Image 1 (cartoon, rainbow, N blue to C red):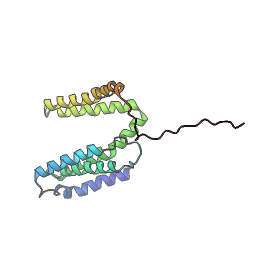
Image 2: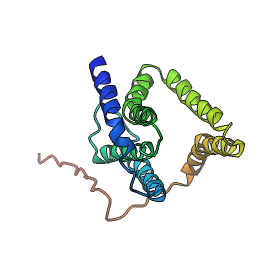
Image 3: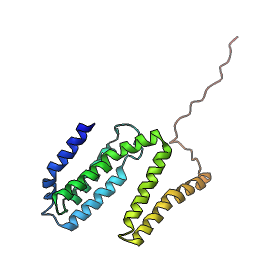
Image 4: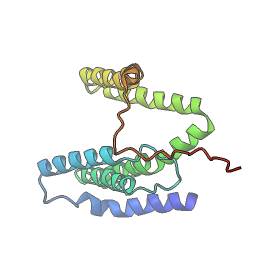
Length: 182
């Protein structure tokens, strides 16, 4: 409840000065590379089937740790303590709390969940537009490709799916006909 949120906010605020100086002695290239690797680990290990209230897979925990680690590395390069606090708090909300909200919204109303997902995608492209029109166009093209073309391909190639059988298959029990001795 509110007590946990307050502890999260206050704890993040109190740790912000420490986090700001965390990587002062490390080169920016190393931070950028490590952040990129941690982000890739997050994407590779993320629990995309997050259905239970607590993930029972180790990969989900490792994914969360990699995402928070990448966020803290990026935040440690910011100029002020308030910027570090904001970056870490938003990252905690995005990686820790948002999956629970998305799951609850999808359970309550699938239509509202779809509208929320579309709104997030639209907001991302609108925020990217002032930075680079080419990047915004590439983002929209990639999003459209993944959303529409890839599922279409999967449905289309399903008819070519072949079931290969062999000794690696599970044993199928065969029932023998019983003969009446009388």
